[in-house]
Amino acid sequence: MRIGLVAPPWLPIPPLAYGGTEMVIDTLARGFKEAGHEVLLAAASDSKCPVPLVPGTAASDPDAVGTGHSELYHVIRAYEGMNGVDLVHDHTLAGPLYRGRPSSLPALTTVHGALTAQLAGIYQAMARHVSIVAISYRQLAGTNLQAAAVIHHGIDTGAVPVGKGLGGYACFLGRVSPDKGVAHAVTISRLAGIPLKIAAKMREPEELRYFHDVIEPMLGHNEEFLGEVGHGDKYRLLGDAMALLNPIQWPEPFGLVMIEALASGTPVVATRQGAAPEIIEPGVTGYLAQDDRELADLLPRAAALNRSVCRAAAENRFSAERMTADHLKLYARMLAGP
Picture 1 (cartoon, rainbow, N blue to C red):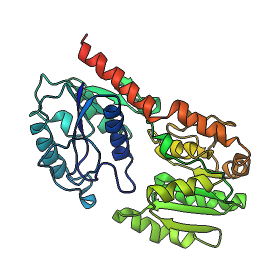
Picture 2: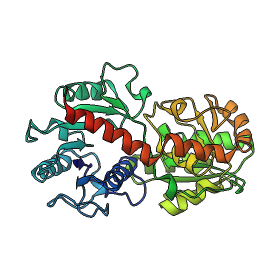
Picture 3: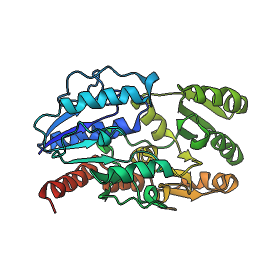
């Protein structure tokens, strides 16, 4: 197959640091190439993914994240350059609705975010013209959206070193946001009497405000705030941790950080929210609970879980190879027709 991929325009592929959607797209592009398919990628012009790029796109601009005009401009450039592809997998919101896309070109889109009532309505309108991919069963719950497939994310587990978990700390990895539960992580680790290392993205104005107003005053001798970390430092942090503490406070549609932790051999202690029950097997690869006190009681127990089993779960259920194969099966089904 010759596969077209359309990425959002704001971050390069792969991302330099934080960027879950961008990491997934990079993993897919590399996986398709390794499987012998041709890939054409529409992404920010400074992307380093080792596949051909659609010419004429703008450079990445993290400050423009979410702006409609930059996404629309990118989508127009993307479809002008999508020549000779068999199908397009569009990871933007605007692309599937763009009328300049040839109607004869098979297309699908992945829902990367939580399906609010408004977004569910948008994707239902899209579904008349493109196939929809969900990233978890929880993401579809409470909506009438019919997905062509539910495909869990995967990562290149071979690129993730397995740590021994001997650092004597739990870690939090994510964004400085109430939804991500960083304040709860501080409370839980203190209740458990376990040091906490926090690696978190903090670029957007609301993230900076939340840090200075809420998180910074909470920090004490039990916590170490590392800021945003690169991939190498991230995997060292995860690998040395006794557990990843992931007390999310919203119905997160997936949660790449949890499978990155498992690939590092590190168990996950998380709230029973979103897709966490689809990822974590309680008592085997981590623990799930809702109350901070209960999570604090479970955190020390996570250190006793078998790290080899955590790694095996990542390799068997959340590998790049499995994610790539699932997508290729869907593409083949689409091209075969009804």
